[in-house]
Amino acid sequence: MSWIPAKSGDRHAFFKLPAKSGDRHAFFKLPKKRFQTTGSVASQSPFFALATVVVLVVAGCSRPDPDPTGRAQALIEESRWDEAADLLKRQLLEQPDDVAAHFYLGRCYLNGSMFYPGAAAGEFETALRLFTETGRHSPISEYNDQYFELRCHLELAKVYLRTYIEYADRGAPRSILQQPMRNLKNAAEAAEKIAPESQDVRDLKSVIESL
Image 1: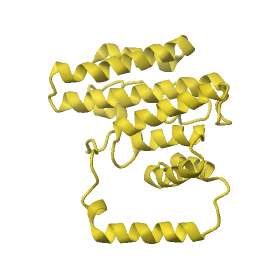
Image 2 (image 1 turned 90 degrees about the vertical axis):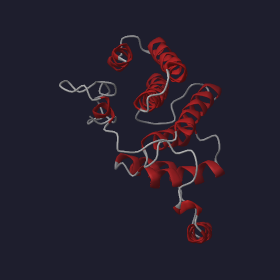
Image 3 (image 1 turned 90 degrees about the horizontal axis):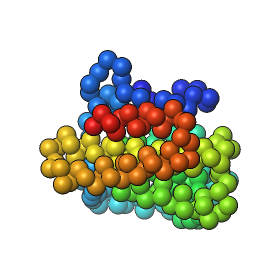
C-alpha cells in the first residue's frame, strides 16, 4: 500500500497494515536498504566530485527555475524522490524559509533511494516551526491549514516508525528501541490533538499498539 493516497480525496491510507500479512515491511513496501549515515562509495570518487561540479556550473548558468518546489512536487508524484531532493535542496539555498520545500524534502529523505531518518525528521520539524511562525497557513494549495499540520506530524510518525522497525529487525536491545518509540508516540499524540477523529490517526495508534 502506498503512503500517498491513490486519489486526492483519499487521506486515510497512511497507516493501514496489510489485511493478510504479518510482514511489517509490506506495510511500507520497504526496499532492501538500510540507513545512510555516510556518503556512498560513488559519492566519494573523484569522478563523482567532478561530475557534481560540472552539473552545478551548468545549473548556475541556466535560467532560474520559476517554480522549483512545484516541479519537485511533480517529480514526487512520480516517486522520483532523489531528483526532487536535488531541486529542493537548491531551492532552500535560495529560499531557506520555503515551508513546502522543507516538507517535500523531508518526504524525499524518508522515501528516497536511501533512508535518512535524522534529516527527514529535521525537515518536517523545520516545516512545522516555519508554519507556526508564519501564521499557520498551509503552503500547499491542496492542503488546508489543519491538514498540513496533521500531515507533518503523520510524516514524522512514519520516520520514527520506520526507524523503530529498522532497529528491531537488526536485533537492537530495548534500550535502543525506547527513543524511536517515544518519538513515535509523541508524534501520534500531536496528530491526535489536531484531528482526534482522523482515520489516519486511528490507524497510526493501531500500528503502535501492534508493535
